[in-house]
Image (cartoon, rainbow, N blue to C red; front, side):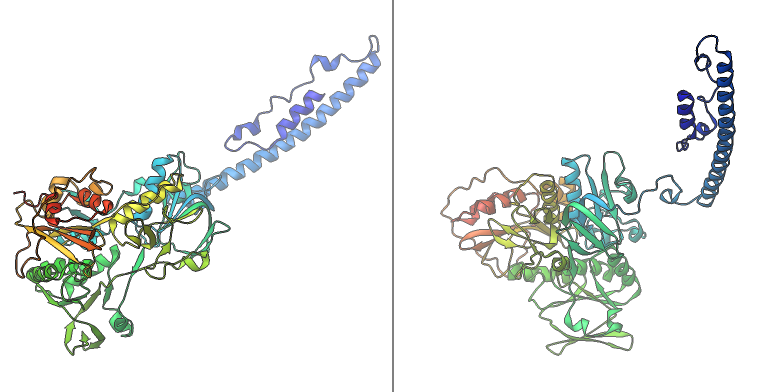
Length: 593
């Protein structure tokens, strides 16, 4: 009887999911076996008959009960099948994550081992670094940008020189070396769907686009998104980057002016400005730094072919006046003018207003500039809003989150990219806003998030191209207020950004030399006099500009000299005084034909 009861209990258990036939099978329910019919003492026929009646009655009652139970289960199962069938028909053609499933994944995981706040270059570099050291890591990138991680430099460089009429949609461009590539670091197939991140085999990298982290609880290891979603983490990277600054005069001008303003930073800004450049007659760029000068040259190319007026104005004496020595800044200004740009140096904006269908920019010296659209390229403000809720320190001099040599702000919180204010063992505390720094600091933060505990010693480089024929690479402190020494030579056909990328095979030049450093720099002593500042009006074909502090080289600009950054990095790292910078300049082979 005990065997029958055990079999009956198993038969009455709920059917396992996905195995409906188990409900209809009851192998344990069979007639009493011979062993059950041989109880009692021999010769006690009456007792045996009584036993048969009892067992038979029990079995009959049990059979009726089981039959009814099985019928009910069969009806419930049929009903469940019909319900699932209806759901499948209703959701046919929908996205896979919305299809009915027995155990659907949540849209956003409630917990992730590695949380990266920000979807730019630094975050992507960190994600790849984490996965390289921990192949099974599960990494979630929360990005305010609606796009997948992409590189920003082409937005103001190569994309503008594309002949593809659909470049704003494809976002593919030809590098100066002629090779084509996408602006995105990786295609969508590289990433794991967010809802699958907790369960996917071998982990992966997922991106949650269009979401912003608005609150951070460092004690509870949780963040809250702008839609109220909460996510807990084990380790977190803050790579929030920065936002374009605006001019106070424009902020005070009102909505009509704001509608005709572009603060250039993202893909959508490129798309919008490219469209505007085809529709208006005049665009004014405010700012004479890297971004402003690159955009001026890019739009100036269209000025010659489409009749577009391009104006660039800034308070300095010349283009990139805060970086380049005055003579080279003046030469650069003339170069930009030759690209078809009306350059107005020493111009400080006093007010902006709307007059008729045009914008009127009033300068402090009384000049007026009429235009149809304004592009403000006046710097970047690091995004540090999370500092308040997280209790993190913001540097009062440079801005950005203050971090230690390992890029840590807390024991399980790191910061990388534009938002990190780090200590440079050679040059002091700094904050850098360049692609190469984002790559290297993001990569190092990722390594340290997986236990590397490595300090940040890297001297990041940056580059700027004024079209395919003039460009420069720089490293260290390049500040025009510092004493400089320039050594120049006649350029050849090989000394252009286009030629440099053809030789290196990469358009993003820091990809090929971001970590490289010369093993040694042999500099012979010479009695040659210190090089003199070139004369005004000379054609600076190619050369090296050394920036000095206390007679030590702290910054180097390589003007139309490429793929020599490891040597420059080594010179700055050594931190030695050099009696003859002519000899140092020879290390860069500037006299090669």
